[in-house]
Amino acid sequence: MVYLLPTVEEAEQVQDWAEYEPAIRRQEALSGRPAPLPTEVGPRGGRRLTARFAEWLLWLPDGWVTDVPGLAPKGRDPRAKQLHAIGNGVVPEQAYQAFAHLLNIDIAHTEESSTWPETA
Image (tube, rainbow, N blue to C red; front, side, top):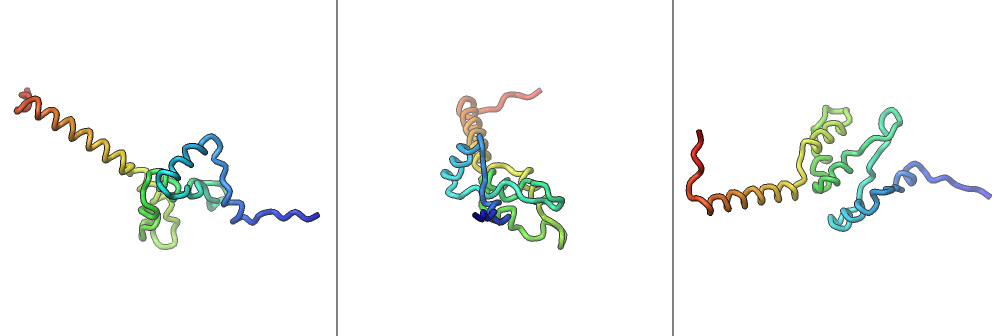
């Protein structure tokens, strides 16, 4: 009997999300996009976070950061720059909710009083 092992490409397509499975499946359902692979093989053979997965976690459109040309010098891996950009970003829906909340506070404040309090 011969058992064939999967190729590296086939093996990388299988992901065990463990205790995060419900959250991943919920985001997939809400976003309408499957979760990209969270890790990849790095230059020294270890596993490392993919920028595409970080982009997906922030609900950014596919390629919003990862398909931007020129983030890294020619011939260099753009992953570090991509993760830096993603890490300095904001989840758009959270930003929207924060601004809506702040605007409602401002509107409520101006309705209570026609003038701002005096400052010392």
